Image (cartoon, rainbow, N blue to C red; front, top):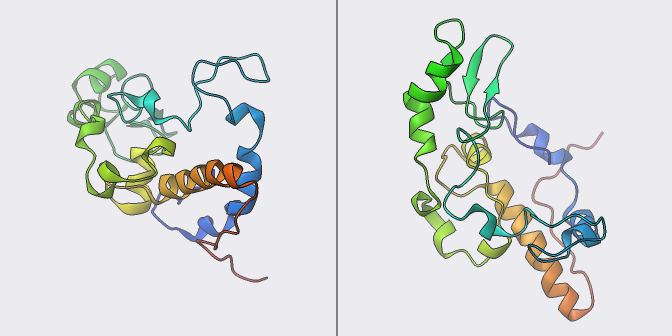
Length: 178
């Protein structure tokens, strides 16, 4: 997925795949089976389209992942540019176990998410990323424009499968004409 830049600039979003094309991709059998079922590739599914996989945690950042920049800055995830410390100042073990930002993010739970997410009709199709919500919308615990966009496409695919067709989507972002 093409996301906003680390500095929050959204100029890259116009290069995202069109919703019509995303729907076609989501029709691939690898995305079309239920959690725990075996897909066409013989692998058990843990599809990002099934929000149950998150249970309590909104993501794995600070639980089993982090990002370390070339300058030694440690962040919870490449998609979550929140400084938790620098390897030039502290060793990794200290940052991982004692950084206030690491500990704060590690405490986040799905129940902490605020805004329209709690009652969203797309929740069953949502793969919300706290880092992406922070980059695109400025709030780790708020809605993520990108997740909403993906969930809408996934739900549309299910609805249109029932109707026997694919609806036309309006474009969220229009790329500049060259």
